[in-house]
Length: 163
Image 1 (cartoon, rainbow, N blue to C red):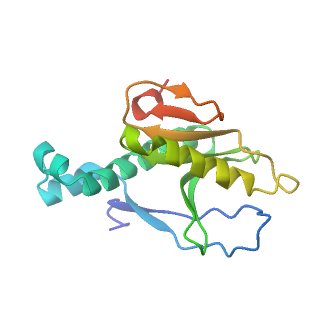
Image 2: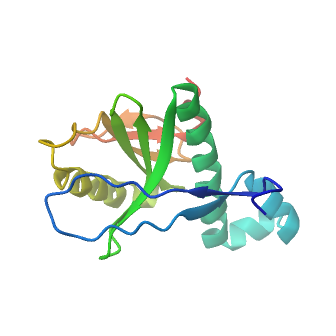
């Protein structure tokens, strides 16, 4: 599947953390183009709306694809993070100059607050004596408007990434 450019691995990110948690280094696999999966599943809009979990996985793959395109244009890379306690962040964007950002992907507005809290908790565990603090924290969504929460986390619709 990799040789046919259907799937691509998203490598794990290894920051310096204060805690002694073991970081999982297994890559996560995403579709290069999630429309391939929808075609293979013969999933139209009605089927996807009736199976919101599958729709969410496809949305996450689409977001990872877009983040990779934009990070690559900045000579950066995209990773994922997960530790042995299953604490995870969907995407870490890292540039060559060590600047980085953490991104949670949520299709609906219902999970935004929890995702933002997850990002804050994650960033609080980063040892900023050994690496810089995140440039930004973002929840990437399918909602309509971009805004910033009081805690500093950006809520950004996927359609705004190009701007």
